[in-house]
Length: 203
Image: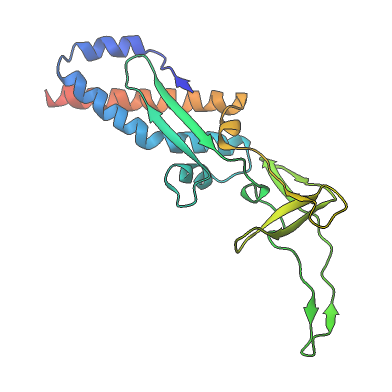
């Protein structure tokens, strides 16, 4: 994703007037962008999708990263955001229930309450909770948590994990991409102006 700033030409002219100090302004603003861009992206994504901001922000440094957010370029004509990531299961989108209901047994091992029936739902788009399908059930996936699976045939082993979207797919959604552009345009321009004012004040 290429990020272009409105009014950048005018700001660039002001930077040139600062001579050598302009390098300081550019360096500080670029540093700000690298540290703040993931948060701006996360906020934009969570406005459209039912995923937590922390899930997207963690994509950059999380121990169990669901993707990566890389920032490249300098403030000349544009900067670049590069995203990558695996396709996520519904567990990242407010899935309910989070665990398969179990039956209750007495001290002799007899079943006193059967496991209740359940329907797995998820909120892929914010505020739009939907059932994942009648053939979807929860099961373990080489870990402590449970994820949804769906049957693809009559054989016991004919099942596949249910998948949704990846970070790149969410970010390239037209609405989300436009919001990211607005957030960065506003945020980065403010940081650039802030550092320019600082340098001018110090001079």
